[in-house]
Image 1 (spheres, rainbow, N blue to C red):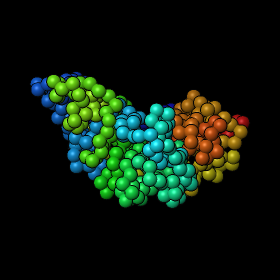
Image 2: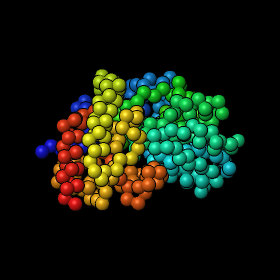
Image 3: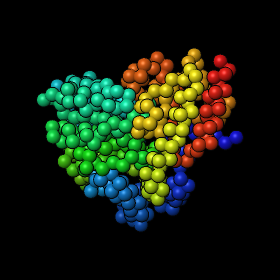
Image 4: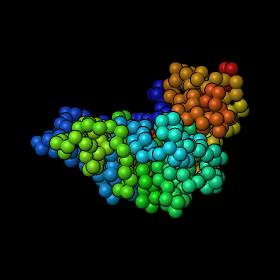
Length: 384
Ligand SMILES: Cc1ncc(COP(=O)(O)O)c(C=O)c1O
């Protein structure tokens, strides 16, 4: 029996074949250090990286490819975005209880080290009321709003377009965590007034692990988190002003970025609308079948509300970790149980004690796999 992978919200799998091929090609054919020399192989590596920057810039509505900075994951990108802001004591940041720990922990650290104040907005599980609550929370010290575009627990999509209009009017820095939406929903930084956009390469963009991106608009100046070799301006003791080097010290993950570029090219050839449609179809089907099983509690938006392909649920009387273990060991179905690095979301849902079981779908999952999962859940229920 083939293994069913329903943990796409953590990392997408399988990757398109071209992704692995591009990674291997980088390692085997031009494994030189990009930006660290003028020889043929370094130039080839550099060309691939530049093409990736250009493709990503175009995809997310940014004109300047030099504003696309590469990191190892979304967490590093978010840390650069949040801890790179020159916050002063008393500055105020608004965020939400849907955030992942990669937003919450850097903010909590800034609370401790710099004395900033952080407000966590608690919208409804379908994202409604967020704008009104943000408006109530805003004050003259509000310097930034940091919001995830989509929840990795409930699949809720947050209204970032409206928040962007609001931050523009109030001249507040707008940081968006697009970890669950990059490659799935279209995003245009300019149109949506997003100042910094962070996302992983290894989820919806179908790239390999070890890839993450932060796009920093021209007008945003950050304090770099990492200082060191950039392959340019070596005579200068200070970090260069020039981007992307300013925010990218150290050798880049060329094989990973080459794979990411191949993933994005594949995604464009499928079309992100088709990907969303397919995932939405699986999600609706799964929700319909799950919701009629007695003793199952599903969290998040209602059945026909627009959402991401992420479903969290619990089964009355059965520990969530036990369910995940049985699904894996007995049925060869990979899901994720627990708090999903987002304890505040679970508090919002009332599942903070043990968390929930999360299934998340991707483009390569099928209706037949959902059927096998539903049959497994029914059988597990009947054992207890
Ligand atoms: C909403 C959200 N933000 C941030 C992250 C962190 O991403 P990464 O694992 O690439 O650091 C995740 C990963 O699950 C996520 O779902």
